[in-house]
Amino acid sequence: QVQLVEAGGGLVQAGGSLRLSCAASGGIFSINDMGWYRQLPDKQRELVAVITSGGNSNYADSVKGRFTISRDIAKNTVYLQMNSLNPEDTAVYYCNADVQSNPLRYAMTYWGKGTLVTVSS
Image (cartoon, rainbow, N blue to C red; front, side, top):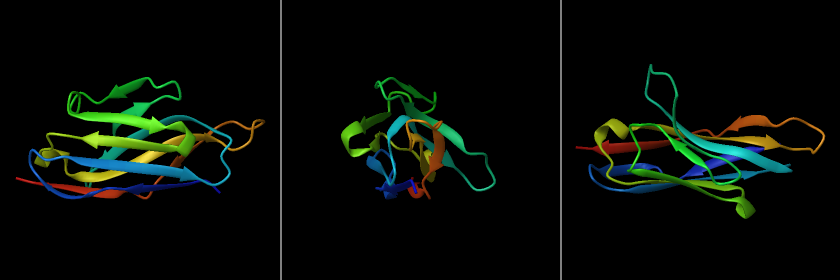
């Protein structure tokens, strides 16, 4: 069974940096897109950044120039480097991945359990 495990959340002051990581494991044949989303209480989950298997990336306008997504294909891991953090970035951050567990099956989307990022002013 595929599992995604996030790490790296925590408390940081405004203007600071954090690096999130998300490792996928368990029955993986290949991974297509990997991404980061975030969610505030009573809000919809929103896309932060996504990266393809070829290394192309897209970002939400609110994080462009401050966040960088990257991945280590050999380690099935995606990272999110977050710089110049502000209180509006406070949220639970979730990673997801489109995983093909079998060459004869379509890819399925899996989610991590989330990691809390809190930015104090």
